[in-house]
Length: 380
Image: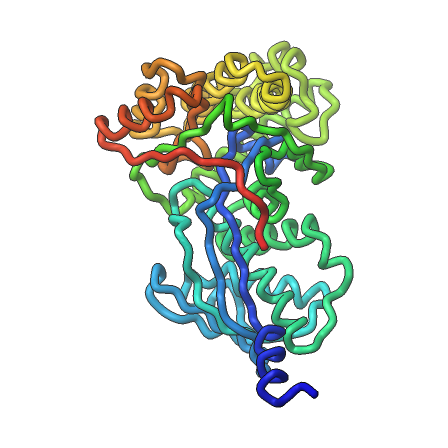
């Protein structure tokens, strides 16, 4: 016969809310996700954690040393006006889950982990993924039923993207939450942002290592500049359509069609669109190069991507360019580029394993922190 203490222990386990949501490094495919393009992310070991238990009153309480306080979120909270502001994405994703039929269930949890905010490693996507999974677990812990369609992580990633758009005012794509929720250990994911189909692309760490270096430049995602570039890309798309190109998004525009008509576009919009059109092609080629073990080709595509982001999309910064320059001057490095939305954050370099420590030392000598990263698993 089970005693009361055992029942209490079982109840405690059932009501626990524990989530680990990893950050991501996008190997290539930058600023393509909003236009239903292609990306090649990996999840990394650095992660955001959420640990607590279900509540019976429907309120969600999140505490964070990094953000410096506690957020008490009632079911009626408004994401646009909620204080503290750092919790607005959580409010938005909780509301989005309720809007599609998730029963209201509260939980309280502490946010922790080693994933830095503002470093271009997908911290906002990890935060949203962690809160969404925490809400699902709180429902189960309170004895509720999660609607079956919410067990689909593609649906959760879409809800997370919508929550970030509403709460932060940035017209972002789906890359970050999708990578956090779908990552495959030891693999990159070739993500088609139109169909949300993702193919694992194996990375043999005995033959190729990835080094992430931190510029030290932190930024709240530059919403105005991010949105402006999207608007410029959309302007180019409209002009291309008027010129006879059949395309739902820039993802559908071939490089040949674009170059044949680029002269008729406003100069800035043409540069933005040139990046997106060429980046989609590079991303698909990079996945094929990885699969074929053609690391020279893969590295060359990383280099091309950075130059496109620097000159055409204009989202790099002097510190990121300096990191890329250090990497490219180091023997054994195949290629290097900024990763993430830009305006600061990190770079990723593809390197021969024997040269990884040399590259780390070169970054340290230049005054930058860096580490080898390996493809990690999904949020759990």
